[in-house]
Structure formats: C-alpha cells, structure tokens
Length: 192
Length: 195
Image (cartoon, rainbow over the protein chains, first blue to last red):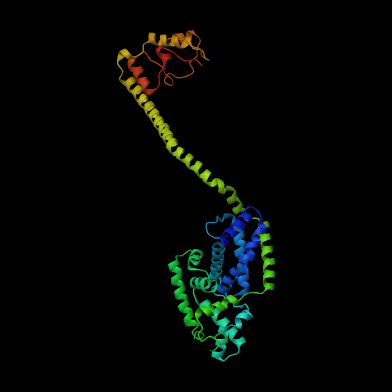
C-alpha cells in the first residue's frame, strides 16, 4: 500500500470522527512542514507558529478533503500558502534565529574542505555558512525560494512541486534554474 | 593507491551546500513543546464557536440553492402573469371611464338634440312612475301632476322651483332644463319626490 493510500485511510478516519487519528498525520509531517517553513522564513519561532497554523487549518478543512490529490501535497500547499501570506505581512520585519546543524553534518566532507580552504575554525565556519545560506535564500523572491527549497532541500520532484504551487512543471524548472543561478552568485565564495 | 574516503573533497557544489540546510533540525524538547501547544490550539478550535455570520451562512448553506431556485421561479411567474394582470386591470379601468365619459356626453347631446317624438310626455312618465312604484322601496312616492295637486295633497313645497326641476312638459324648457340639470316635475305636473 502506497504512502498516499495510507494517508487517505487516516484522513477518512478523521473525517468519520476519530479526531485522534489526525495526530498520526501530525507526527508524520510535522518535521517536513517545519523544515519548509523554517527555510522560507529563516526564523525558528515563526516557523513553529506557522507549522501549527498549517495543521490547524488542515484539521479544520479536512472534511472538505476529497482525496483527489495526496494528503502530502495538500498539506504542503496549505503550508506554502500560509507562509506566503505571513511573508507578505512581515515584508518589513526580519528576524533570523537559526536551528543547530547536526554534528554529523558538520563533520562531513564539505566542512572539512571548506575549513581547509578558508583556514578557519570549523565551528565559526559552520555558523558563517549557515548565515550565508539563510541570507542567500532570503534574497530570492518567495516564489523562487519555494521552488528551490522544495527541490534542493526537501527533495521533492518537479511534478509534486508543480502540484503544490499550482503551476506547470515548465514554470517549476524555469524558477529553479533562475533561483540556482542567483544562489550560485551569492555563494560563490564557498563553491570551489 | 590513496584512500579516497579520507581525503577531503576538492569541489563543493551548490546542491551540496543546500543539503546542509536539511540538517537544521530542532531537538526533541522543541517537538515536545510543539505537540503540547498544537494540541491546546486544536482543542480551542474544537470548542471555539464560529462567529454568528459563519453559523448563519452554514445554516443556510444547504438551502441557498433551493431558496434561490424558488425565488427565481416566483419572480418569473410574477413577471409573466402579474404584468399581464396589471395590464388587463388598467385597460378595463381605462375603458370603463371612457365609456362613462362617452355616455355622459351622449346623454347631454341627446337631450339637447333629441327629436320632439323622443321626449317623454306626462303619460309616459306616469307609466314609468307606476313601474317604479311596483318595486319595493324604503321610501314612499306619490304622483302629483301640478301645483293644484301639491296644495290638494297637503304637500308643502320647501324648495324653489329653480332649485330642483325634475321634468317639464314644455318641450323647449324641458330640453333646456335637462341641459341645465335643473328639472322640475312639480311645476310642470309630472312627478315629484317626497322624502
């Protein structure tokens, strides 16, 4: 049974009145949704609030979910729309609070290479790169940021992104290409 | 042969840099608090009542289409039949008033220009009076034919002749009186009303 079918069964349970079944969906998707929103906003507290908003909206609207799309793309769409609305309101305010990068990743080859290249202390480099990555993402327009986050960070394919953003696959590819060009120029110091 | 795994990579790509972002994950304490807050907010959502307009909208949501259909049908019927009814009523009223106006004109004209043969005479008036008497009325009628009978029957004339003339035997005066709406049967000996 596919992931989509499993989600649909849970959704039907919630629709039938088993409110507790919704918790299964929260546990399954909360980290993914949080990650998308966090990378969109570059703020931990905002991301937490918006992730909760997303699940509450989904819970309120789950009665209208007919299963024509997968629950996964449906809730991602709610998350993206909620974040977009938030970003429009927050356009003049920007607070950045970072999540910690896993120690495992900070010990990876990338950081080894960058440390050797820049002759800096690894801890400082990790923080510096983290700031630079977040700044670069925030320089992109929300539409381009969404596509690059969903594809490069979350690993979604073009078709799913097109469904989530309600655009064509061609538009997704175009936005992705442009966004990556922009990021290349912002992060050229780190790209060997 | 050098060990490739232990050597740091020579090139960092954009995709690899972006993958670093995947590792920015909150700790378990964060998720514990997240779950508590989310459950609390969901409970509030379940308990919280919708605003009154949402409730009203929801209550009528299922019936909006039905009501709209019925209202539309009623409006259509009203426009179709109501309009023709109004037109019909207005037409008949206009026709009725026209007819009354026309008959009035005709009566005046016929009174002015009628031939001597068509004028009522005393016997004809008496016959008409007799037929009137045969029907039941809530007032009494007495036939009188002239000033002598008025005096004879003990009636007192409490109005001037020129104020109420009902009929006149003199043809010229009669037709003139009709035109002037001041007929008198009393003076000419045709009839008079007694109240």
